[in-house]
Image (cartoon, rainbow, N blue to C red; front, side, top):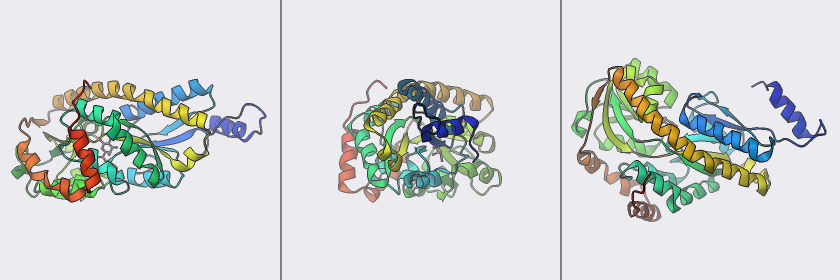
Amino acid sequence: MPFTRREFALGLAGSGLLGCTPVERPLWSADTHPRDYPTVLAQEHMAGRLREMSGGRLDIRVYPGGQLGAERDTLEITMFGGLDLNRVNLAPLNPIAPATLVPALPFLFRSIAHMRRAMDGAPGRKILASLEAHGLKGLCFYDSGARSFYNTRGPIHLPEDMAGLKIRVQNSDLYVALVEALGADATPMSFGEVYQALVQGVIDGAENNWPSYDSTRHFEAAPYYSTTEHVMAPEVLVMSMRRWRRLPDEDRALIEQAARESVPVMRALWDARVEAARERVVAAGITLTTISDKRPFQARVAPVYEQYLNPSLLELVDEIAAMEDGDG
Ligand code: GTR
């Protein structure tokens, strides 16, 4: 990728060739979402704060829209130090760091407020810390709302309505097990391929939150959205440990602070985006099925807890379950 003039100048300054205050090369970050999506805007906010707090010495350059690759691939690159920052969902981390399975469990969180409290508290800190052993510094969690199923065929009221549907899932065995426990066939696939696969009938459906259902235009191809709200796993912003280790303590503290400050900004943008996305797709004519009693779905997926978790992760589940909902 060619350098912009500014990056080139920063690079020169960083190298000391210009003989002025050393400027670090901007941290590169990858995100699968478009430029106006709350996760990307939150990283831009973080970049702004970093520039302010470091007097322009530290900066982030976000590459949105999946231009640096699918999440599974960019994660690998980040673990090896080829990319500094990466905003991903927890799902592609499931095969890498077992603790990330916990927040991705179906029906673990009772509400968004409960999820926020758990991720802001001790469970969230433990999960972020567990990433270090895998070459990643966990900086913060961002919201991802609740994921629900949508498809090209018809409304889902009960698990029986999912029988035989081919459902795209993220690259995580947990999601495969979840979808199969509901009686459907799971097809792991990267995010960027889902629209075409829906249009071509390679799959019948997928699952996601309102903002992603809207921004990807999956709603045009798969207009039956049923509010199963089966997973409330958050997003996570990670940094390459290789890069992290090279930074002085003072810069690490600034990065952690800027990440922390971006979380409430992200949440406010997110809440507004969820509403706007839902209104937009409903106005576009999707068939919305509201599922108020989730128990038939919960009963079917309950076995995946024991299937995927070792005793220490089950303890983390209990710790989260025992937490109050909080005020969001
Ligand atoms: C979105 C999430 C992305 C990606 C995507 C997917 O909600 O923000 O990071 O995980 O879902 O389904 O692949």
